[in-house]
Amino acid sequence: MARYMPILYVVHDTHDEWQFLTGEDVDMQDMMLVAWSEIVEIDSSIATLDLGMGYEAVRKTISANWSIRKID
Image 1 (cartoon, one colour):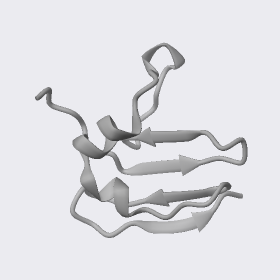
Image 2: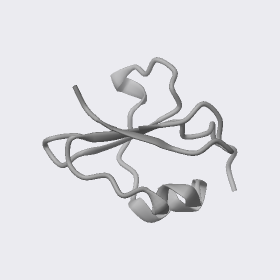
Image 3: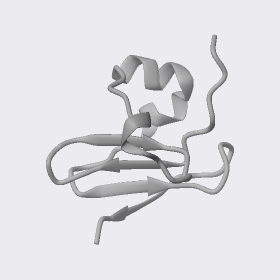
């Protein structure tokens, strides 16, 4: 399996789109479409997130608990 950076920021925006980010700046050219099953394979804690549209989850490290809040 390839080595990935930890997912530390998850967004479920008001357009029902999801983003799984490392917390670092991202160029649009680096973004890609990935299946939910692949994301869960990379980090199974993602499957425990219950994010409605318009919410985000953040954590400081991969072993930290998720903090969920409404998007401003």
